[in-house]
Structure formats: structure tokens, C-alpha cells
Image (cartoon, rainbow, N blue to C red; front, top):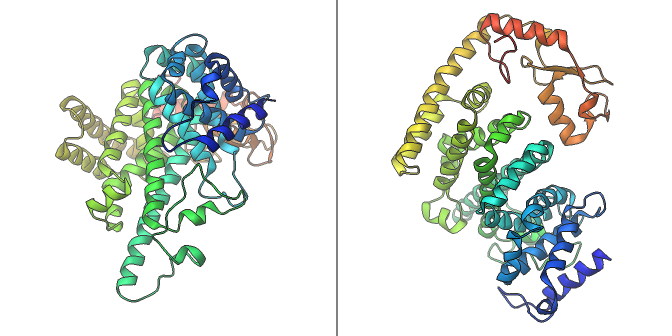
Length: 457
């Protein structure tokens, strides 16, 4: 019945709408409060509404209705929505991870478009102090939900940014080879190679269910890149909002902090201010046409670092310093100069970032020296990450010993023991208490910092 109601509303909206608006006929006769209650129920009910696409349709319909009718949107700030809307949004954001449009929906991910309405509503309601308090309380009591959402945001923005940049590189390569009369092996084959200026069909008008929408999108290099840079921009904004308002919860959770810093912030900053940016070979005018704004991205990344540093400078410094792949003192120093040159931050924020970068370089040099001089016993190293553990635990089936945050992140992603490929829960992990004490005594003696601090410190 829920599916029928939402499908009916969705079909009516799709069939009657005019560009940029929504028809008032049917919806002017609908009572807003019970309708929004119904939509929230579908969005949040992962144990009852199993279809992730249906839950995505619910938030999409809420977005369209509430932004079309201001009186509907006002209900977001009154009970019960003032208490329940943010948890519903978090749950549906996670829930649409498994939504697919068709067999061909491999790279032009349907889930990206289902998440956009969630992000747009978040950007609006988080301007309200009451909703920000609810977000903080929810993240405090539901750290796993926050961690899952952050994991999905990180995966999305990395994929979206990479797709946009890869497409720009392809476009530049083909343009160069076309001008020299050669063929490009990187150009799409088949219909996509015929006309790079063909119009890209809007997201809401997807054609046949089994049509390869990714292939159709690739018919126009610039539009395809613009589409993905647009998606990445919204995803970055969502990550920025979470770090601003619940940065202390992110740092407290530990499980997701390393992933956020290493695979997202450190990696993107390394790319944006490093030599790899020169490989894109596009002009500032082309950046504007594509909606790709490196300065805005660098500004957001630096502000996220500052949000996290204000929550726990010691822990953020320790985790960034561990990143041997993307952390380079010269890269961060260059970022400081870039921020100052282009006036991306106010004076106080610029000084704070400069102080953080200098302290980070000193701390990292000291810690790497301590690691080089310490002969770390093999049993102290995580079997998955090959790094010294701070809270060793054992998987009950495979008997492999890893650091707790590594095990919890693995369980959060797959609910499996990665070595035995058997189901496991966080509470099944076996603490290695005696080993933990020996590791902490060794680390204290050698001057090595551990996650969460030393138990004997």
C-alpha cells in the first residue's frame, strides 16, 4: 500500500509537472502533515520497507513537495518532524546504497541521484539549532550509523571526483588527437563516439528501464564531467556540514577517522596542490564551464581539517602523520601558501591552519624516527594493516588478531570475518587484554603514540 501511494504521487508529479515547478492540483488537496508522516515512515523503516528505491522515492517526493510549498516546509521545524526528520534522513541516505536502476547502472550510480534530495534537505534544516542538536544526539547514540554515512560519503565523493577528472583528461586527449588528425584509443566506442555534443538527458527522464544511462551520459564529454563535478560538489558540502556540526563525534569514534583523513582529505589535498593537477591541462575558463572549482575544494578541505583539529588536535595530528602514502610536509606547506595567496580563509583560520601544519611536520618527524629506531615485535602488528595495534582483538572464527578499529570497520562494511568469510558482529570480537598491556608498555618505552593514548600514560 505504501508503494502504491508513493508511486501514484510520483507518477502524477512526473506526468503533470512543468519545468522547474510542481503541479498543485492533487497535492493542494492533500493534508501535508499525514503525507509527510507517511514519507518519513518509509524513509526510516529499513526493517519494514525493504526496497531501497522506494525509500529513495519517498525522500525525493518530500524534497519536491516541501520546496514547492513553503507551508509544507515549515512543518520540518515543528513536532514530530523537528525530532524525527534528521534521523530519517540519515537512515534513508544509508538505505539507498543498494538501489540500482537497471543492470547497466554501474558507473552512473542511481544512488547518487537519490541522495541529492537528502543533501538538499540537510543543507536547509541544519541551519536550525534544534535540528543540529538532534543530529548531535543521534550521532552520539548511533555511532555506527554516522560511520556508515561517512563511509558512503567518502566513497561517493572519491568516485565522483575521479570520474569528473578522468573525463576531462579524456576530453583533452581526444581534442589534441582530433586536432592532429589522429584517433584516440581512449575515446568511447559505439554511439558515444559519434557525437560528443549530443544533449544529455535529465536525471528524472531516464527512458527505458534497461537503457545504459552511463553510456548515454558519456555522449558529451563536457556535460558528463560537469555532471560528476556537480555531484561531487554537493557530496563535499554534505561532508563539510557533518564535520562542522559533529566533528567531535567523528574524532571520538576513531573507526572512521583514519579513512576520512587518509583516503579523502589527505589524498584530495595531495592531488589538488601537487604536480598531478598539471596533468588535467584545462584553462580556468574550462574549469568554470565544467563546474570544477579547485580553490573552493581546497578551502572546504582545509576547513574540515580545522573542524577536526578543534575537536581533538592530538588525535588528528597522529592519524595524519601515519599516512605514508599521501602526507608530505611540503604538500601541506604548499597548501598553506595557496590558501594565503588566494585569501581562502580569514586571518584567524589561516593562522590556525599554519600552526597545525608546522606542528604536524614536527610531530611526524619525531614519530617516524621513533618507529625506525624501535624493533617492533611481529605479534604487536595488526595482521591486516601491518601497523602497531592499540587495542588488539581476535576474530572468533579465523583467530586472526587485528586492531579493534580495523575489525570494526571491516564488520561495518561486510559483517564478515575477512579471513574466514563467516558472519561476525562487533560484540563477537575477543579482546586480547594481556597483549594490549604489553603493546602499551612497549610503546611508552619507545615514545610511540597509540590510538586513543597510552593506557599507562
